Amino acid sequence: MMGERAGTSPSGGSWALVTGSTSGIGRATAVGLAQDGYSVIVTGRDRDRAAETRRSVESAGGRAIDLIADLGDPASVRKLVEQVREAVDGPLDVLVHNAGGGGFAPTESTPEDMFDAAFNLHAKAPFILTGAFAPAMAERGRGAIINVGSLSTSMAAAGTAAFQASKAALSMMTKSWTAEYGPRGVRINSVDPGFILTPVNEGIRDMYGTYLASLPAGRGGDAEEIAHVIRFLVSPKASYVNGATLTVDGGKNAVVVM
Ligand SMILES: NC(=O)c1ccc[n+]([C@@H]2O[C@H](COP(=O)([O-])OP(=O)(O)OC[C@H]3O[C@@H](n4cnc5c(N)ncnc54)[C@H](OP(=O)(O)O)[C@@H]3O)[C@@H](O)[C@H]2O)c1
Image (cartoon, rainbow, N blue to C red):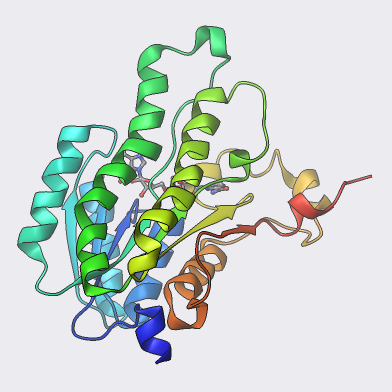
């Protein structure tokens, strides 16, 4: 009954699509889901890092394919949908919308294409992918979707309006999709990471040393610490977690640093 309710045990050759799995959190999630028994679709723009993640998934005992796509380009997202449909030989039961990044600028000097890129990557690509794969999950009565947000989904910083608004759009979709697909067995949840020591933060980690030491956890997080939470949320152990946002930030959001 438990597995039936959760609907996300990797049985019968289940596949997981993890966007942005050529690096950082996505890469750790891809490898972790393979350890949990999923076959994994690795995707990103960088061919070499995609192949490297695929090999890591295979070393973890999983099956993997790597597909190159620019999720900032809706045509490339639609092509990815076709490629996934052609490539997989079983149900796509897990979808992790993790790809993210982009530029920051004050509102008055944010070029329109930077604004559009943020919304294409963080909101439109997940929207297209969910529209393509969630209906089949709902028809099978099982599936799990994770939206990787950010602390900036709920808190503001100057010069990041386009990025934050696009992440907030994805955060709202967690609730919209829960209303839409939840009653048919698909669980959608968000994970909002704090400061995680992935390649995107490589250049600035020293600048944040004092800040990170001031957190309740006393440090930045590792990609695996986010991946573990994603793996839990897609697993049957989280069978009653629907439409939730789990903040994984070492306690940053919980305290005022004095
Ligand atoms: N690290 C943090 O402190 C932190 C904090 C809050 C939220 N997050 C969120 O966590 C997610 C993962 O971040 P990370 O720290 O693991 O960063 P990362 O190491 O830079 O990884 C970002 C991933 O997104 C992919 N990506 C970026 N733009 C893309 C595009 N246009 N098309 C396709 N793929 C694209 C990259 O692939 P390619 O380079 O191969 O294209 C890469 O695999 C992001 O959504 C980020 O906003 C991270």
